[in-house]
Amino acid sequence: MKNYLFPVYLVTSFLVVFVTAIHTNLNTALILIMFSISPISIIWMVYRVLRSEVLVKSTFEDQWYEDFPKARM
Image (tube, rainbow, N blue to C red; front, side, top):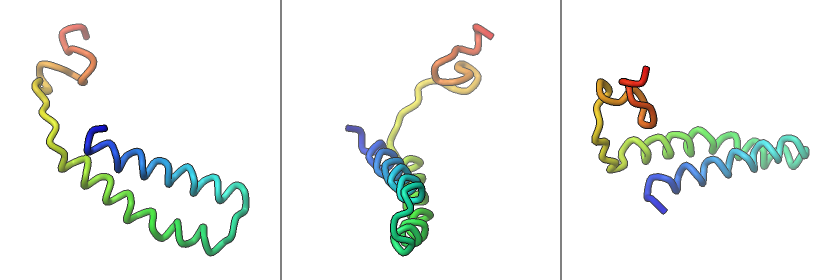
């Protein structure tokens, strides 16, 4: 697995557990603790993704998006 994808998977699974805990009416203290940790986990995920060493070979003028060439528009 790529190094920058681990935080994405971890924080996404944390979000799924958090939303499931809310809908199943689990302990309120647990939900509040998860709610307090969530901004820290989001900031950590964004930091790890932005600091990852991903080499992009095309520029914005060449490639509109990564999967759609600008010449086809």
